[in-house]
Image (tube, rainbow, N blue to C red; front, side, top):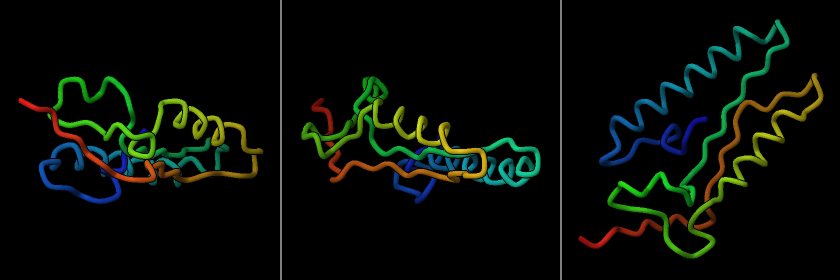
Length: 107
């Protein structure tokens, strides 16, 4: 599982982005190494998910439905990757909310 942070760096996200970039590179390399064995490696890069992830942070996705994705959306993407016929492979899926709105918690 990756993150949108693996696709572009962002201010105040240096360490988080670096780890997600690393996961993306790891997945790409592992995919190449495993291709001949029939093992498929895919990566899902979700944007802001409405979840408990943000409980201890100073920000969260906006309240409107188009400002976040749901855990079920990620589960659907996982299912899509897992149910492809053996000759088909999905390298990456990037899931983003329609509108990227960040809401900051009041002190």
